[in-house]
Amino acid sequence: MNPQSPTLKLRAGLTIGYGTPLATAPEDIVLNGGTHFLIARNGRGKTTLLRTLAKTLKQVEGAFEAEGKMQYLPEDLRFDPEITAGGIFKSLLPASRLKAANELADRVELDLHKPYGKLSTGNRRKTHLIVAEHSVKEACGNILLLDEPFSGLDAYAREIFENIWHQSTEAVLRLVSCHPDYDSMGMPSAIMIEGKGIRHTTAAGQTWSQLKHQLN
Amino acid sequence: MRLFRLTTATLFRRKSWVICAFAVGVLPFLLQQISTGTENPALLKPAIAQATWAMALLSAVFWGFYTAAKQGESNARSGVGEYFMTTGVSPTRQLFEIWLSIFTFLAPLPLIAAGVCVFAASPSMPDERSMWIATNLQYAVLYLLVMAPLVAVAAAIASRFGGICGFLTSGGLALYGLYGVGYLRYLGDLQGNPVLKWLWAFSPHYHFADPTERLRYKLGAIAWDKFPLLLAYFGGILLVYAALSRLIFRARATA
Image 1 (spheres, rainbow over the protein chains, first blue to last red):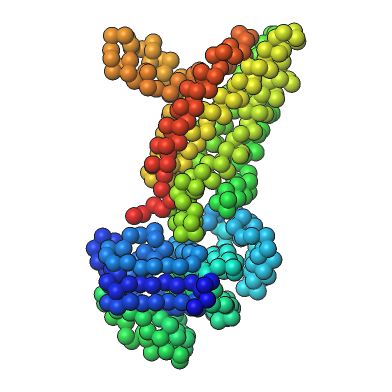
Image 2 (tube, rainbow over the protein chains, first blue to last red):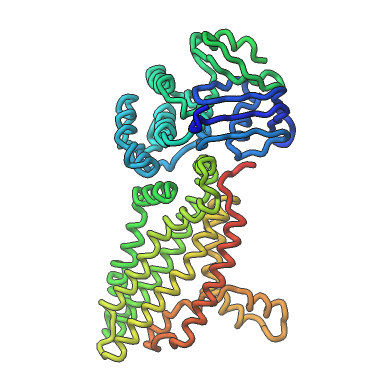
């Protein structure tokens, strides 16, 4: 394996929850570079799993290993209302990535001069995603844990981000929690929380339409 | 230093710091017009000096501590602290970067105040003038030493208990140390009451860092052999408050 390749290993017995167990991985799950989706019904533990993997929440039991530069983008992340998206990029991104970030903002029609507090939910999401994507360090493995990055995002912008992920190198591992709004969305690698179990399913042509009926 | 840059850009954009710069740099010249100084020119310069340092203190309390509390609270509750934590920025580092950002705006205030006093309110006698410069420099150093840990206290308490608690605690500590401790001494019989005596001894005696009286009555600078003792005293308070702030601070609001 490439030494720069990021890895997430959820060991069998890993149990997540806020004090009381919410879900358990019955067997080892290993994720490498690429995009992996995290799907479950509401309240089953998607955010809890992401927070556990991001190490801001302690697991109830078991262990996991994460190799790579971590970034967890909480669903409820919000910046100060006065600062502009352009100001956020200037503050958080290295100078070498600023041009690319501004170009992407232009493509997804994000107004860089508008105060963050006046941006729509979708445009705030774009800001967060651009920050996360352009904070990636090419020289090492990266792990991006994205909690509901598509909520509020229009189909046009979502497609652009999905394309970026498809073209991305193996140096980035993305675990994306979402509730897709179209059945044909491809999910070749998906972590599913079904009832109390966490399992990993992979298949080249796997779509949301095939997986959603398995959720309970 | 990404959180420092983000906080600094936010504060700069918010522009409320302009009020502090105006209060310290301009307002003393306007306030003298409505003071008794207009009837007695000899009082003009002391009035400017007193007003300038009073504005610097008020700016620290009402802008500095309020801003620190606001930033501490929003860092914990907006997910920004959690985001930075996952990228490897520890809570200690986050508190430091927030503190440094606010202090970047606060630090020029005593320098502006000292500048106003030296250039606009300096006595004409050469001996008095050199003493005046020394007093103002001492004042600036003590101001920074006293305000620095209180900014951290405001941010830390706000991150855990909310912005109002952070602001009131740091503001209350500053006002108590500046004025309350003195009243405590006069109100109670310190020698006869061990609790009051203990309370007085462990109170932050910020009034030692307030040489307004020295400026107003031209009492001269704090003796240079005593000044290091004051630095050590307020340095000690700084260390205690810094440690407490770190213990209280949290980067994420919910467990």
